[in-house]
Image (cartoon, rainbow over all chains, first blue to last red; front, side, top):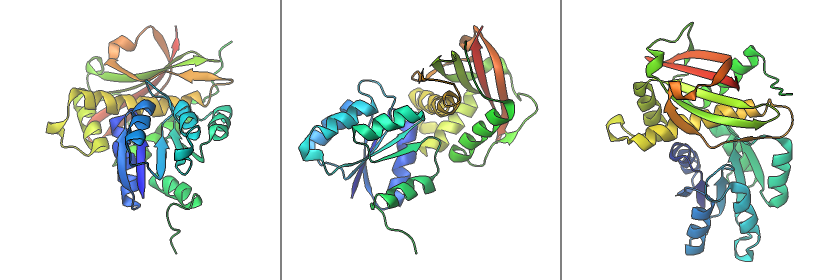
Length: 125
Length: 146
C-alpha cells in the first residue's frame, strides 16, 4: 500500500511519514496540492492521501475536488489532516469527497484508528 | 465585536495538548521565560474573522534547532535555516488552528511566518503560556490587534 503525505511543512510530512510507515505503508511526499496532482499524474497513484488544508499553490480542498473529478483516481482514499477544525469546513471537505478527517494536533493512535475505520490497516487483536 | 471564547486554563490545556503530541519529553510549566526574550524567534499565524489577532510560538535559536531536529529526526548539524522556519512555523500553525476553533463564527488562518520576536509586535498579549523544554524556553502568546 502506498500513502502520499501532502503538507507544506516538511516537519509535519516527516512526522506523518513515520506514522504511516510504522503502519506498513510505503510513503511518498508532496509539498502542496499541485505537487501532489503532478506526482499522481506521473504515477504511481497512492492508495491513501493524507492532506493538509492550508497550503500554498493549491490547497487541500481544491486537491480533493480535483482528485474526485478524475475517474482514474476514484479508488484513492482521501484523509484530511489539518488544523482546520470548523464544523462547516469539515462538512465541506467530506462533501467534496474526503473520506476521513483528523484535526491537528493528533496522536499516532488517532491516525491508526481512522485508517482502521477505513479498512486500510488491520485491527489489533 | 471580536469574540475569542478562550479562558487562560483552556488555552494552557490546548497548548499542552500540542506539546504532548509533538515534543518528547513533554515541556514542563515555567513561571517565567528563562532566557533573553528579546533574542527569541517567533513563529506566528494570523486569525481573521470574528476575532482578529495573532498566535505566536516563541523560543531561542537553539530551541528552534532542537525542535526542528526532533520533528524532522535530523541531526542538528544537518538542519538548514529553512528547516528551523518550517518546524517553528508548523508549531504556530497547529496552536493557531486550535485557538481559531475557539473563535465564534467563521474565521481564516494565515500560513505561518517566522520572524525575530520583536517583529510580531503591534499587538497586545491576551493569553500567555510559558514552558521549558529540556533547557529551552518556550512561550506561546495570543495577541490581539492593539
